[in-house]
Image 1 (cartoon, rainbow, N blue to C red):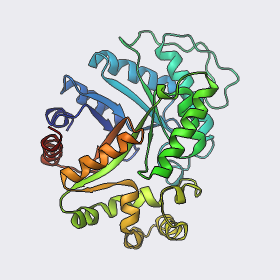
Image 2: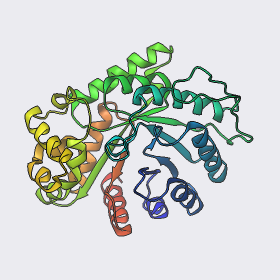
Image 3: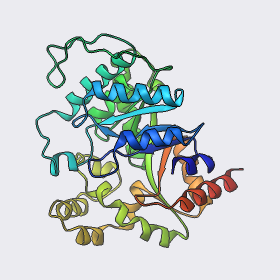
Image 4: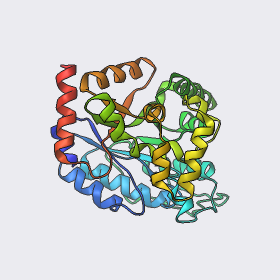
Amino acid sequence: MAAAAEQAGFAEMWWADHYNTRELATVLTMSVVKTSTIKVGTGVTSVLLRHPSVLASLYASLAELSEGRVIAGLGPGGWEVTAELNVTTMSPLGATREATVMLRRLLAGAVVETPESRHYPVHRAALKFAPPTPVPIYLAGRGPRMLELAGELADGVITHGLSSSYLNLVRDCRATGAAKTGRSPDSCEVALWIEVALGERSQAIAKLRPKSLLMVGGGYDESLIPRYGLDPEQVMKVRKSVRAGDSAGAVGMITDEMVEAFNLGGPPAWIVERLRELEEKGVNSVMLSLGEGAELSEIAELGRGLREVMS
């Protein structure tokens, strides 16, 4: 799949990391072995499930193998981390902060001593080798505090939401975080994860409806719902159905507005125009997802369609 993305002209290939999907290290290793130019990232790996010292070894190894083509994407993880695995002993924000700092130091060759750490106390932890180049670290986040943390510490933030109101919040929080360390907000790129579907608008939206389920009904702060341009009452009904395990009922509540708050569905020319608008709003890069189980032919079609419009 990574080779298909590279052949289709994409610059990066991002892989999700969930306990119930293919194991991260295996997928990433195969991706870098089968490619030569495309960058490979984790979008994202959970710091509640993987210790930052282990992640440091993983990313350094991949950077060495790929000659610097790896990006570390970190975050607390999806709703399944707490809902299905019952990982509740850590503060998502605190763990992400500590993991980011430790990972950065280990990748830089430091000997790390953190006896007072709440989440990751280590004694003289250090890698025995170094990556050939610095590994960029991106943090995933939607809410203000995680967005600020990305602005403070990370090279990029991975987020979701296409509305101007939400993107304004992202930029403001990024700037607030960057000010804490005296660096430029532009030091932290804004990357949007977007599900896409090619085709006639109504058909594409229908295809994206079930894929919008967790994005709409996931566990983000309720204050963000109006920012996304959505009706809180409608969204909370979807969330309630998701929590009850009624996926079919929840999908039936997904409106076109909910789909288009997070996704892009339509002909290539229409999608390219939307992407250009996002660039004007300060978005640095987009992660275009065709969803789980995407065929190699779909990757080729997406790349070909976008290239034809943009050339």
